[in-house]
Structure formats: structure tokens, C-alpha cells
Length: 265
Image (tube, rainbow, N blue to C red):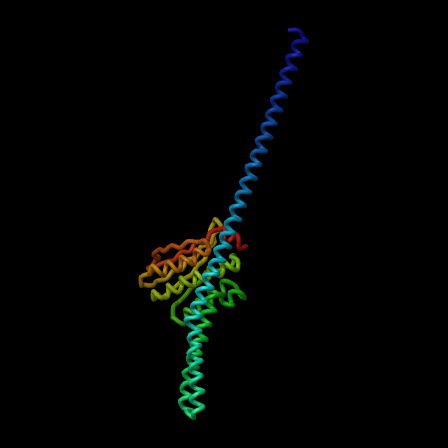
């Protein structure tokens, strides 16, 4: 083959190789851009999903707060306010007795009124503590649950062990909702006449939070009681399950999804 023909052939091959390399680089660039766009679209979709979950949680918390206000209004109207109205009538009776010179009668009525007033004060104090104890706002979640446990131990002579530090990672509203859920679960556990109750909170690998309330009680759990716990857990977008305890009794498991914890940070 003539020298010029060989050179032309080699030049054609080099051109083809360069063209192929250019096409390969172009394809790789296009593919890379496609992958980046796909990754960006996935991140945008995940961010939108998290935002939707946060919005859902906010709506659930607002609804729960409204329901709680209605419940408290009913308790106050049918309980404390009725009692205070009765006490006012007793005061009127005592004043009337004094005006007619019946001091002994007035003294008895006033003594009875004072006893009723103390009962109302205790009821309102308990109600205030149950709604949102000041200690929860001032000292945090763990301290509030500890105070609740102390109250049970002193009033019921039931031992309560706690490991609830992980609850501190939740935001203020979520802490209140989880506190109320645990309070309800503890209230149900106490009715089963246990000797020991334990409360533990853990952060799960997926970022969610789980709470376990275990007791060694022997009384059967009622369906309405479990529904009350589930209703409070739904405020957090969570779920509730009941399992037998390893040494008898039962364990109430409350699962709080990861987006609740993430939204609270």
C-alpha cells in the first residue's frame, strides 16, 4: 500500500476513535446529568414528603389541643364549678345562721365548706398537673415523668422505675402529647394492682421514638382503656400495641414515627 494511503487510513482510524471517545464522553455527561437530576428530584420529593408529614403532625396537635380544651371545659363545668356553687350556698347558709344568732350552726357549715374547698383545690391542682405540669416546662420531660412516678409511688405504694431521657429530643408540643399518653398508660397500669411499673423510652435506628410501659398487674385490661391510650398516641401519629411481659403482666408499646422526632428538633 502506498505511504499516502496508509497515512490516510491511520488518520481515518484516529478520527473514528476520537469521534467515538467524544460520543462516549457526551453520553457519560448526559447520563451523569440524568442521574443528578434523578437524585435531585428524589431529594425534592423526600423533602416534600417530610414537609407534608410535619404539616399533618401540626394539624393533629391542633386538633388534639381543641379536643383537650373541650374535655377540660366539661370537667370544670361538671366538677369544680358545681362544687364551688355548692360551697357558695353553704357560705350563704352560714351567714344567715350568724344573722339569726345561730353561731354553732354557722361554725359547722363553715367547717364543712372548708373541707369541700380543700377537695376542690386538690382536684384543680391534680387537673393542672395532668394537663401540663409546670415542671415539664421548667425542668424538662424526664423530670415531669419522674414527678408523675413519685406521685404514684407515694399515693399507691407502687414502685416505678424510669429510663426516659430520650424523650428530651422531642419538641415542646410532642413532649406534652407523649407525656399525656404515658400518663394515661400509667393510670391504666395502676388500676391493674401491680407491684412494679417501669417506663422506658428509646430512639430507634430509623429515628423514631418508642416508649414501653410495663407492669406486673393481674387485672384484665379493658378495651375502653386501651382505646384511650391509642387515641392519645394517634395525636403523635403513633401506634400502640400490647404484649405479655417477660415475667407476667403486660407491656404497652407506643411507637412514635421518625418524622415526629425530626420535626421536633
